[in-house]
Every structure is written in C-alpha cells, then in structure tokens.
Length: 113
Length: 119
Image 1 (cartoon, chains in turn red, blue):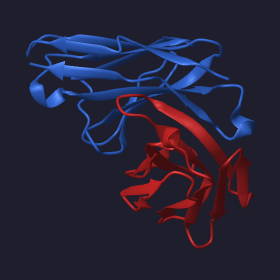
Image 2: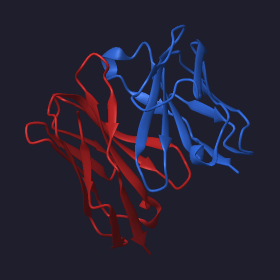
Image 3: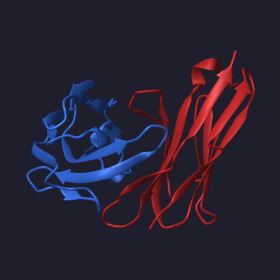
C-alpha cells in the first residue's frame, strides 16, 4: 500500500525567503505526482503535475522535482510571499489500473510579512 | 481550466437527519468522480469512487449504506449522508476526472468542499 509522507508538517518563514517542501512515497511504481495548495476551509488547487517520466515541472515561482527511484519529490518556492501561506499537499497516483491518488498529510506554510 | 462545483458549501443539521451533497463538473464530462473526507489538520481520505451509471466502489471501512453515492449523469454525482451523527462532521470534497484526458495524466479536478456539522 502506497504511503506518502510530507516533511515538515509546518513551516514559518519570513517574506522573500526561498523554501523547499519535501514529499516521500514508499512505492516507486507511480503514474504521476501532483502538488496541490489548500487554503483554510477550501478545496484543492492543483499547482504542478509531474509525469513519472519527467524530472521536474515549473510554474512561475514554483518548481517541483521528482526522483522516482528514491521515492522523493520536492516543491521549491522562490521569493516567498504572504499570499503563499496555505497548506501544500503532495499526492501520488499509482500506476495500477485504478490509478488511485494517495495524499500526504500536508505542510502548513506561513509566510510572515 | 476544468471547474468542479459543490453544493452546499456548508451545512448544519441535527443528528439523525440525512444530508445530500451535490458535485458537478461544469465544463467537462466526468466519467469518474471521487468523494473524499478530511478531518481538521489531516489529509484527504478517499471514501469512494463512482463511475457514471455504475455502483460506487467504496474504500475499506466506509459504510456504503451510510454514505450513498449516486452518479447518474456525466456531470453530477451526489453523496447522501444518511442518519448523520456528530462523528460524521467533516469536510467533504469531491473530485472529477475528465473522461477524455486519460492520455494527459488522469488529472483530477477538485471541488471547493462542503463543511458538514452534525449537532
């Protein structure tokens, strides 16, 4: 059974800092990996999706990397802003026929002005 | 981008009553829809997967008679929490997968969630 772990559980940084969020998964047989953002009491916003054959994806100040063999992904946020404060969830899609999505428990990010 | 809506966004009900939550894909056909629940400060846990016109597949530990799922059309799925109790209070999120985007990574699009509070 796939297990997804995110470290740290919470992170507080001053505005302007670059930061890295970590995600690890136990079963490397994945179809793709997705990073989401969740604001308090809200649904999920997809940030980046990395296919299993890809090493990284970039969108604006966000860069996500994937090392499938070691079961790790990182989300790099450059020049953080208070508006980046949210919970960031990593989710891994299995390569089995069900293509099920397994979520990590998230990293709660606070960017201080 | 693909949009998924949920209604209501928030509901408060008395113990013993039933509550229906709707999930709609607004600009695409969702052959598969997913229902998740999320407890405070925890991640999303998949409750069930439904394919249009078929019975839902429930995850282990989820009571199918308590959480009734109907996916009668390609744009609508409903979750009915029957005889709700305080322990059913949670944040329920639906997700839909575009049936035409299998080659694009099976991407799921998520609704804004429904906060259920059972008194």
